[in-house]
Image (cartoon, rainbow, N blue to C red; front, side):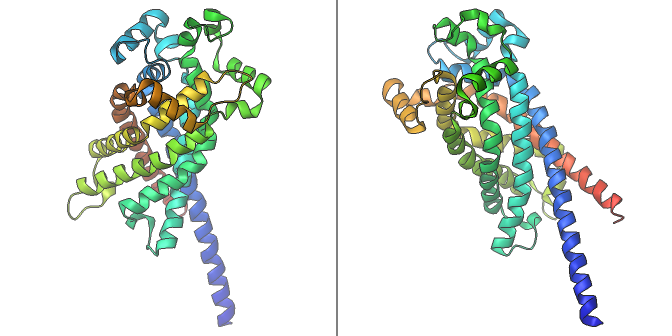
Length: 327
C-alpha cells in the first residue's frame, strides 16, 4: 500500500504544480493586459511625436515644434492620439504575452540554474527571462505596431507625396488600413519590420527587466522583501527600466519605424542592416536618436504605471487565487 500511496501523492503534487503554473500564467497575463492599457493612455501623445520625428526628421525643429504642429493641424484625437486603437492592441497584446511568458521563463531559468523559486532570482536571471519572453511577444507586436506607425506618420507621407490619395487618406482608420494591407500584401505585409522588432525587443527587454529588478534591489530596505517597497518606489523602478530600454534600443526602433512607414506597397521592404547603414551614412548617428527626448519623457511615467498596474494585479490576483483554493 505504501508504494501506491506514494504514487497518489506524487500525482497529486504534479496536478497541484500544474494548476499553480496555470493560475500564475493567468495572473501574469491579466496584469500585463491592464498595464498595457494604462501605458497607452499615459504615453500615446509623445509616442506620436517620437514616430513622426523618427520617420521625417527634417520636418520639425524639435519635439515641442512637432507636438504643437500636430495639435494645431489635427487636434487631439486625430493628431496626438492617432493610432490609439492599434497602439492599444499592440500594447495590450504585447504586454499580456510578454508578462505571461516572463513568468514562465522565470520558472525555466530558475529550474536551469537550480534556484529555489522565482522570487529569489537575481537581477541578471530576471533580465535573461525578460529577453526570452520578448521573442514571443514580438509576434503579437509587429503587425499592430506597423499599423500604428503608418497612421501616426500619415500626414507627413501625404505632404511629401508618398501617400496615394493625399490628405484625404487621413480619414482612414486602423481597421481600414489593416484591410488594405491584407488585400494588397497579404499576411506578410503586416510583418514588415519583424527582424527589426526582434533586434529591438529581445535585448531591449533584457535591459528593461534588468533595470527594473536592479532598482528594486537597491530600493528595498534591509529586512524587507522587494514586493514591499510601495507604490511610489515601484513607479520609480518601472521608470528606470523603461528609460534603460529605450536608451539601449532606440537605433533599432528608428530602423523599425522607417521600414514599416516607408516600405512602398508592392516592393520588398529594406532589411534592418541596410536601413541602419543608410541612415548612418546619409544622416549621421544623430538621426538614430531622433525623437529620444520625447520618448524618455513619455517612458518614465508610462512604464512606471505599467509596473504598478502589473504588480498590484499580481498581488491581489495571487491573494484571490489562494482564497479560492482555501489556502
